[in-house]
Amino acid sequence: MTRIISALFETYQDAERAVSQLEAANIPNTDISLVTGDVEASNSFQRDVIAGTGAGAALGGAGGVLAGLALLAAPGVGQVVAAGWIAAALVGATMVAGATTGAVVGAGAGSAIGSLTEAGFPRAESHLYAESLRRGRSLVAARVADEREGEVRAIFAKFPSLDPSTVRSAYEAEGWTPK
Image 1: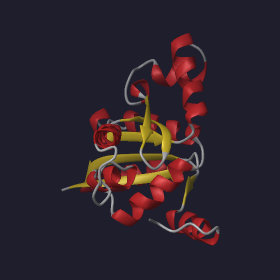
Image 2 (image 1 turned 90 degrees about the vertical axis):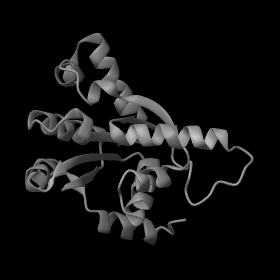
Image 3 (image 1 turned 30 degrees about the vertical axis):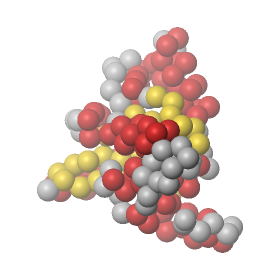
């Protein structure tokens, strides 16, 4: 069976390193996604790739997920940079939102939350991730067979990731409520 293993990172750089490690562990590029609300940091990475300098060149030179980053307008979140299967879901949400301007959109259709839910995340996680992206954080997710779950979690543990329960509590203490 396939499951989604995800981690939320404070910085784009930590998310970038996690993606590189997933690729090094031979997780197929088609099963890795990165979405970040830190548009400036990811743009800096892309400039490094183009110029052939810095960490971006070293990581992006081989291609893969990081080389496929694209700027998107995620409904309800704002601008994000995304790559992988979640990016495809967000592109669909952007198209639905654009097509339904002035119309009633049902139950999350055309939203980042709806896209994340359709991509396989539980609705409560989708709300939390969307808010985190809006606040400039980064999400990395991998779709893997059950037997690779521990390996992916160990890769994520190498980098400072955020505990979703702690993040949710902090957001709620500030007055955030999932809509």
